[in-house]
Length: 186
Image (tube, rainbow, N blue to C red; front, side, top):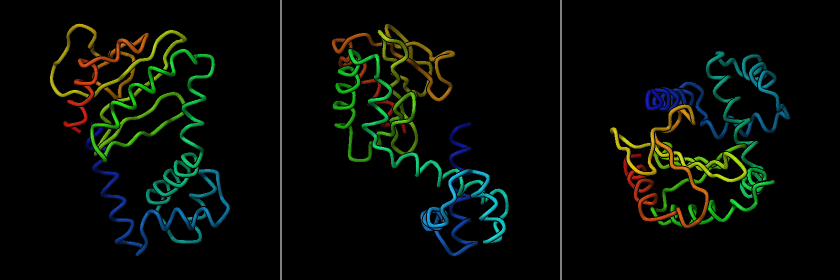
């Protein structure tokens, strides 16, 4: 279902430019220049001042707000995730160092409570779930499980599998191999 949502969103972004003559990035700049920050304020602005339909206004508002949020330093977001869990930060740093070796198209996208790992689509995530454990979510095709690799279950619906990590020693060839496989499938 995620692929269908991403495809529909991409189609809307393309249609936005065809219909308005401006790209999504240009509309985001217009929204920023307007000084409006709240989602509904942005929607109202785009509908009344620029004749947007609700769907396109909602799309631009969502991206404008996400872009503004991403202006926070990625380091700040990651630091916030590991507040009170500082002993887990080396696990994150070790994982990121290995993942960055996959290719130039790896996107590391920190959110409030986890870090999304993307290529053409999300292939994994890193989340400090408890004070003693980091969960690595991985999107793998098929019914691959075994050893530390388990079905994600209720952990996170954005990934198919999970590996629980409590020390940097557990960031081994198997884990990096599963992440690389997910990256190659993305």
